[in-house]
Image 1 (cartoon, rainbow, N blue to C red):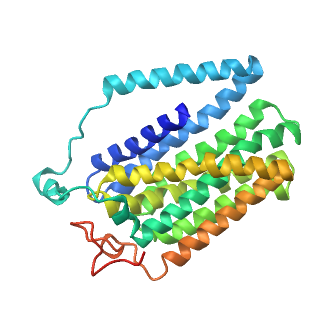
Image 2: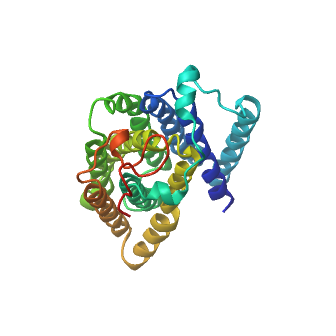
Length: 314
């Protein structure tokens, strides 16, 4: 419970900080660089944890986590400014002025935000089920060490992290809607691989390319749309919605995957993750059909937070 509350605060506010610091027109690049460090941290953790567990014990892993969190807290208290200095001068500052942050209801009336929320929930839930049981599956069924398990998870995160800046640049030129669909498809294929092939190295490649690379594409493209649409409607509001979607990793993915694994097998949890991703991607495609991806075509007026040209269908 404490970890969940802390994660919700950290991830939503960190994204809001980056969104406020990014100059207009450079949101995707800033989010890409930010995502690089995000993914690298998640990549180092499983690998370090696996090595510590093999060399010491599981209690030492949790002690190391507590020490790292304490160090991060000190860094925040010392280095993180209370207010973000807006880049771009008076002209850009004027473009940021609004009557006030939009409510969640206004943001969620936007079809793209509805679609993005759905695909994020599906992705988080599927990854929750996958990451909850991949270690169990590989240690019990494939008989590999904790270090090898950590290597799979680290490879997935490192691949996603390294690709974040590259994908951020590509998002400036390519259609973000297509990127989200392709990325989610890769993640789905990676999630279902343990069902199809019960072997270590195919799973390693599937996590590296499927979940790692595919997840990077989904993450950067969706964040780029969110920042463009709502940076002047209340960045923290949208980032808090992302934290809600992220919570599906535990509430739906881990618990749901656990129930499925108890009824059937561990591989059934991976299959459920695949189905959730396919469903979320299909909803995204249908909900965004015929809707443009540019800021002026997403259904929200750039200056106010009201639907451009009238209300957007709920």
